[in-house]
Length: 114
Length: 114
Picture (tube, rainbow over the protein chains, first blue to last red):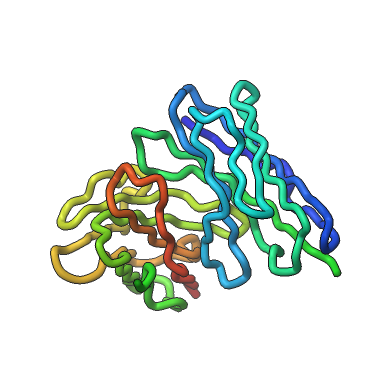
């Protein structure tokens, strides 16, 4: 069974600063995808960034980047130049390439202070 | 292009009643996934459907829950004889193919059982 662990229930960052959210996962598969989803108070799930396990290069989307350590099964999300609109729950998720079900962690609540 | 539509957004049911949750996938998408989010938890996969077929219902509770995706019309998640423990947010996602890396999520239906 695949499990996704987010060890930080809550994180806080000041506006314009950088914050890193942690995620580890457990799998015996070699071909999979990893995702970070954002869930603002509206509860809409928004895809922030994805990483294919076969790619060594870390994914980047504007202010969002990941640190993917395949051997350590670690997939952290770095948010640079934090903005008030970044405040939300952030979920790490995993999906095996041959499958379809997303496995989510319990989430990290990010607070952004002015 | 309209996104994934779910209705109702909020649903209140008394114990023992039936709950029907509807999901209209994105245009051109024929694969639908249902997830449940219990309070303080991440999303959990429930069922995967294609038009007129249930592909995988391994995450569905064995009793009282059923899902369908007819040839015409939205996908329906039905919960019979609801209990307080069914209170949760139910999310629907859709994709163009089963191998698509991205699942597009709807805004969710928050079910409250009183």
